[in-house]
Image 1 (cartoon, rainbow, N blue to C red):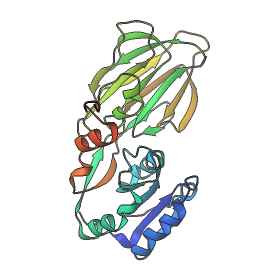
Image 2 (image 1 turned 180 degrees about the vertical axis):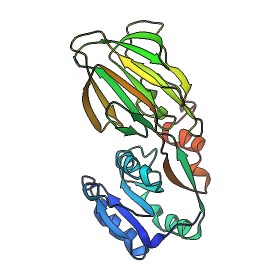
Image 3 (image 1 turned 60 degrees about the vertical axis):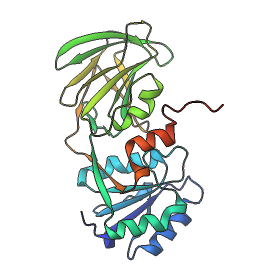
Image 4 (image 1 turned 90 degrees about the vertical axis):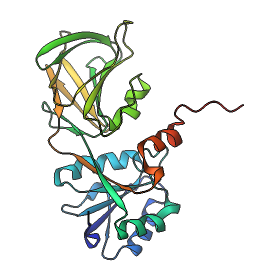
Length: 267
């Protein structure tokens, strides 16, 4: 795949110290690229470089999935599971991008038809009374599966399976598998377990409790209050993540290096 690097947007998170200065450094290495903040993301770039953390990249992914624009992230945050390159690697990164030594991975996304919100990682649903548990009825393709007495539900993509869903007891899903994971948050029954479903299933959540209000949050950022029911399914658009062709950007290498997956404790 070839990129039109002359139409590159560099988007940084101004709340992260040093992100603006590092963005200028990238711009000096890419002719005609322009710098923007998260608050003024431009329309129509052919390629987007994100400077920040995973939260910054998630916000850009939600916007640029609509135009099928590839995005690449420099991590200036904490974990950096999605925004993978470090500022110290900028020369190697730019050289690989210029030479075409990369691949673009398509990642499935979620869409809430009730609100129109989309998510790359997950959607989290809670009842209106946030300080207590709620009874949440889960329907798959119109068939009632179960009722959860829990603090909420997480509907996660494979990309998001290593985020909040993992913390709540969900499984790790390789990102090239098209499925969703539904994970109850702090369920009050021992038989409430996460479930993995195909990505073409239609998910509906209701409650009989009053008031019939929900809070739904997309990627931990876009939060909305809605009534009666929540309907979620696979988005028609994909996020497109640009990954360099080296071993450290393979999913299993990231699991081992970032999450210390399956590593024995030091003696």
